[in-house]
Length: 190
Picture (cartoon, rainbow, N blue to C red):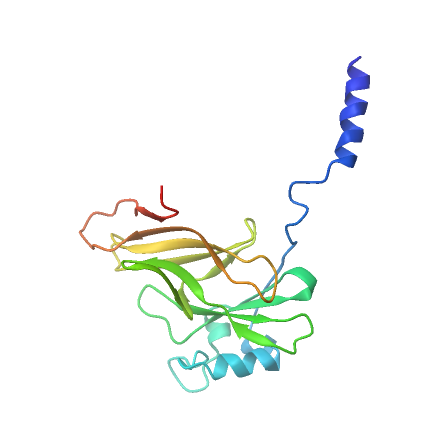
């Protein structure tokens, strides 16, 4: 009887679609230098209002000095998570540039967050990194060295070019009160 149950479960597993069947498989690559960027991405990165490609000194390669990431999603659509300007004492700012499947179009993703006044979005995000294991983008901002204030969040990309980043979770502590405690969750609301 146990063998019959095992065979039935085995064959049912072949017929039942996986719960993750619609989730894209992402390919993650760490960039070594700005020369790793396709020309279409380099143009956007260099010409943002914040002049993202500029570092401390003339000719500095921010990707070589900091980091850069390319993530391939559905149908060869990609996002580039790139540094934007020279870092501050504890933090970096990044920009997310999407490129369509044939590298003919680009767009800058808005970075969603919850501000003191409500939902918000910005062109730059603090400490953005691709979490390869969870297939999400994480964000981290430290208000000061003590770590008693700041924020962190988790963002999702569905792998599509014409999509948006979605805020999954955010923790923020605005008051720098000398208490290095866990930052309260501000999204999702409970």
